[in-house]
Length: 113
Length: 111
Image (tube, rainbow over all chains, first blue to last red; front, side, top):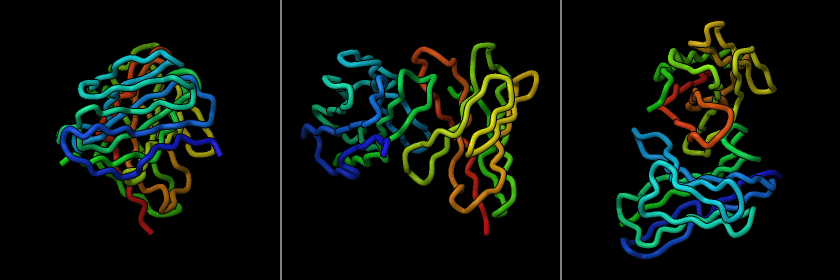
């Protein structure tokens, strides 16, 4: 089944403890992206990747890192999480870019205490 | 900022057509209209998109006015599972201008 898989679904951590949220897609998509969703602010793009080894900042990249070493994986790294990064995170992918249908993962609810 | 205006909420009886309006009066000639929906904190789901002609797929129909300043998403026979927040988005069909999800319309399908 074609899908975007995020893990974990829920994560509670403490300030400053490095964490990684994984994202994997099985559709051979070139484009992958991370969004965060906060009440009243909608979905905002954090980082995106047009292809392997090509990443770029979205609207809210501060405090996050990404890597794209393989086509299928696009992990989101929080080196030193802070409470303002408590949010619902979504990974998404599409065949080539945003002009095409975006497939979203099921989301990761992160709480930073 | 979102370039679209949608009503915050709508109700629809199960089995009836749900017509969700969207205003995009400042749309540019190269911008498409996209519709996504999000069911209770799940990942958004693509529904349909179009430029100026009406479009139909297995999920919905998209009607775009001739001046392209507004559009309507039609779910022909709404079911309880269609209860969701529906987002209307305009953006060019190329490049990486991010999808800007506004507040959307919360559609409640009622039995």
